[in-house]
Each structure stands twice: as structure tokens, then as C-alpha cells.
Length: 424
Image (tube, rainbow, N blue to C red; front, side, top):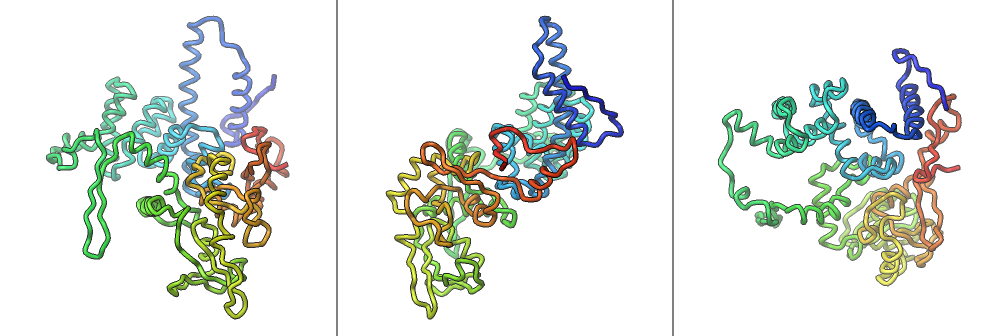
């Protein structure tokens, strides 16, 4: 049995977390008391304490999300980090992330949660309800929903009120409007309308019922994640790009050819070009060449064609079929992007001549991790499992590994969990 002594006011946040971890470890090893009444009381006390811990957790996650720290560790988003690194269900990861992102707009909710006066369930419900509102309506919604909590409504009932919070605010302020034609359609069936613009584009509007929304989330939502820390597109732009990719079979059947020098592909600065002459910066050309649906035409001195990669640079349809059988999802451990939506990756780097387009040198990775592997190879550990599949494991950034080797006594070192796979 370990002994824990902490002077609360003088202790650092790290010391408090370490002490809490030690206490939790000891508590988890204890058998439940024989008395059911005692267990009921202990459960209520422990849950209340856990809710207050969620307040601190929301602060941690909010800081992590604002600085995009997970991308440095090989995760395309904070939600992916919570899901893969910490083993959270996607719904719980999304719930905690929403609370972390909305806490600055919910001062009363956060104050009550931190003081143990509001449960995490209520706090998460309010945060989810106001995520769709502007700051003015958010303040009114917070007061309205906390009023329902004070009246004794359950978290489920408050969530039901939250789903129509805009209507409740409009009703209270006497500003509600008659339902529009789209609302009158109802919500049982999915529908889409498109209108062609004068310049040849299309406006798209519609509604997906829960079943079709689940299909959307399982395909487009995965592809619409930020492409990396430098991806400044907002979610609507990324979603449109993801839809276009799926409709065109972009990761499987693109007809784009990029013409570039071999030196450009391996690190040079000379620009590449498309077949119509459109110039492409060297860095962008290298990123494009990583996509399994783009064919690079490599040129040597005097613009002499050295290698047309359409047949040899990319896996054949038969090879891809085998890879999709081997890899149900991205080869990066913990990444859940389906293999059918992944790109073919030359395990040891095709551009550097170390990985021919042979089936035993190929794997499937999602677009985000394909680019991450290319830009940060020192944070990818590659092994093979007993079935011959490549397994990519994410490693912490170099500065984090150095810190864990030389950290002071009592600091948090590399976890022992096999799911994290820190390098030895």
C-alpha cells in the first residue's frame, strides 16, 4: 500500500494529478463493502467527485484542442486522440470535446460543475445544446436550461429541451416564425434539393434522417477532418472536398497527372505542372504525389521522361483488392478510417527508391497519416504482425521522449499500456 501526502494549496497541478492517480489505483483494488447502503452512499460521493474532476478535464482538453497539440503526436484531431490514445467511445470523446470547447461561453455551468453543484451529465447536455447558437442566444440558453435543471427535470429531458432550444428562446421572446417548407417536410425521410447557378455550380440543401446520417458520418465525416495543423479550411469546405472525393472515387480512380522533375519529388524546389500547364509549387507537388489517385510523370535532365507511374507507381486494382482484404482500416494502430477510404502507401518510401510497388511493400493508410508519415518519419514505428500485415505505431515527438527519459522524480513517464506503444 502506497502512502500519499499532499499539501493541497501548495501542490502543483502535476502533484495533485499524481496523488489522485495513486488513490484511484488503490481504490480500484479494493473490494466493495458488504453493505448495499454503504455502497449506495459511496457511489454517490464518488460520482460527485468524478464530476468535479470532469471540470478539470474540460480545462485540460480545451487547452490541448486550442493549441492543436494532438497533431504533433500523430493524431489528426483532438477527438481522434481521445478516442485512440485514451480508449474513449466516439460519443464520449465528442461529448467531452464539446464541453471543453463551450466552457468559455458557459460561465455558470462551469462554476457549478467545479463546485460540485451540477453533474457532468447536465453540463455536457447544456454544452451540446448551445454549440449551434451564437453568443447572445447561448447566454439565454444557458439560463433557460439551468432553470429546467433547478426544476428537477432529468438530464434526458433537459437534452430534449436542448434539441429545440432555439424554438424555446424564440417563444419566450415572441420572435418565432412560421415553419418553412423544409421543416414541413418532416424528419423521417432524407431529402436533397440542388439548384444550378449561372456559372455552372450548384447550391445543395437537404436533410438526412438518423440512418443516412450514420452513413454520412461513417464516410464523409472521416474524410472531412483537417489535413494537418496547417489546414486552414473550415468544416464546410473540408466536407465539400470529402464529398467530391467520394463521388469521383478520388482515392481510387483519379485521372490527374503531375509532371515534375525527379529532384522535385525527392526534395528539390523546381515547380511541377499539370498536363494543361498549370504550375504547382514543389511542396504541393510532393503532397499530391502521395495520393494514390494521382499519377506522377517524372522527368530527368532535358525533360526526358524517366518513369510514368500510372502502372508502376500505383497499386493495381487487384493489389488494392488484396490490401483492402488485409487492412480493414488504416494501418496506423488506433486509426479507424476504413480501408476502402484509405490510400495505398509504399511502406518504405517509393520516392526514395526503397519501396517497389509489390504487394509485400504496400499498406493502406488514411490520407492524414500518409502525409504525417512522410513529414515525420521518426514518429512512426513500423512492424509486421503474424499475418504479414504492416502495423504503424505512433511515437511521441522527440522532445517529449527526451523529457520522459530525463524528467524529475515524480514526473509522469511513458505509460505501460500496450495500446500506446512507446518506443523503447
